[in-house]
Length: 120
Image (cartoon, rainbow, N blue to C red):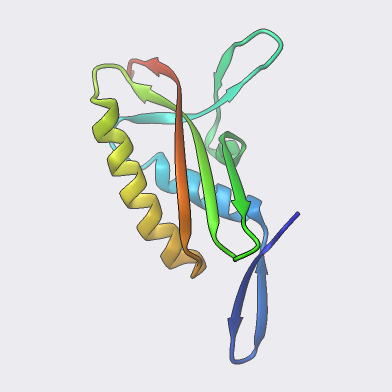
C-alpha cells in the first residue's frame, strides 16, 4: 500500500489512504443532494447506506507514485436532485478541502451513483 508523503523542514509525514478516505467522506456528506456513501454487496447486488463512522468504506483512494490522489466515491443521492449539479459540487468541495487537508494534489475524482433515495 502506497502512503501519501508530505515533506516539511522537520522531516517526512506519511498519510494512509484510509485517513484520506474518511476525511473525503465527511466532506462529501456535507454536500447538498448526497444522502450518504454506499456499500455494494457483490453477491446479491444490494446497496447499503453506510453510517457516519464507516464513510471511508464507500471511497477508494489511490496514491500514485507521483504522490497524487485518485479518489472514487460510491454515493447514494437524494431523489429529485440534478445528479450533474450534485457531482460538480462534490468535486469542487472535495478537491479544495482534501488538497488543503493533505497538501497533495488530486489528479482524478470518479463518482459512481449507486442508488437514489428520498430524504426523510
